[in-house]
Image 1 (tube, protein in one colour):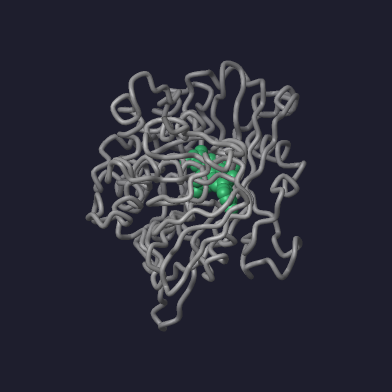
Image 2: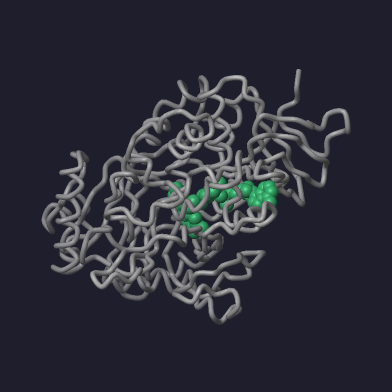
Length: 447
Ligand SMILES: Cc1cc2nc3c(=O)[nH]c(=O)nc-3n(C[C@H](O)[C@H](O)[C@H](O)COP(=O)(O)OP(=O)(O)OC[C@H]3O[C@@H](n4cnc5c(N)ncnc54)[C@H](O)[C@@H]3O)c2cc1C
């Protein structure tokens, strides 16, 4: 029987031929293998991972959250489909699959009337799109549900179809569910071979593999991998941070939802029995890192800086906590202002990867770029057999199953699972409501 996970294989074990090679073993590469096998059973796939284990990229720093409330139809349909797969894990990944799902919801908080109006119009929009579970809560309703927020919060938006899971378990569930994929670990120096406008396969530190189809799923390294095929993938990366604490204040109980606070949107959720995990899309000044590498706007970098941990800002945990304490009116020593939060912190960094070819056309006909939330899941034009699943921003875990299915339909030549998913095409410059992420609803006037 063929061994599925190979590290440093003997020459006679090393696969030299495949139908599809996938470069990158994070959530999107593993999901691609799972979905290709479902779409075309028996396809011989080799997945190449540069680390000694799968899921060694951005998911290590992630909050592992999922939610359905995305303003753009392509995005909320992608999340609805993915959530469906998470909840039917036994059916899709095999009996006994445990993804560690906790569906405790997402509570977006408004502290003033302007923020409340944005949440209200966002909920109305989502309900019109069919997300009937979305709720707008006024101040009294928030206070009744969560007494510690009483008197402080103006309103909230609640997504009950949201929560978190174990991203490592998800990646390995994808892997275990594929029977015709060989996972080659610790593979370095992968280069894509192209001849006469066609993919021929790859060369690696372990040897060459012939394959007519190659998928780039290398997260923040995707641009560098693309260059080995002579292409420049239009993506930029933005460093993002998170930290876990071993302690949590009593009011922020184990069954609380993930809280997305008002602008600038620090967020936090309970973690394990006694801790919490925090995030904030806090911007660094990329021009200070290396002007050549800055994309010329905000904190985007053209090439990732490795190791990404060197970009951690040591002030990030205390800044995030003091921001939350200020927003929730906690004095020093109270709630998020309690110094016990700062003991034994585990602080991480990773990249959000964005497409860099999204733009709107102004009434005067000028192209204005924007930070799209849409991944690129498509064939690369001009090189037969080359595919991309990249730019999964801050939601590559929650969207992984649907992203895998979109990639598989492109690769196998089947219709997309949902016509809305055409929006993930490489050359789709704009779709409505496609911006904002956590820092906005993506609705007009909310940028
Ligand atoms: C702070 C933070 C918080 C986040 N929170 C969430 C969240 O709550 N929910 C959510 O859904 N998403 C979240 N994300 C985003 C999520 O982690 C990413 O969107 C997701 O990990 C992208 O998956 P990927 O497979 O494309 O890339 P990655 O996870 O980066 O995986 C890429 C893989 O490819 C491998 N690789 C790279 N280069 C090569 C090469 N040349 N050869 C072979 N292998 C290679 C890497 O080692 C890695 O294993 C967060 C991210 C960050 C940084």
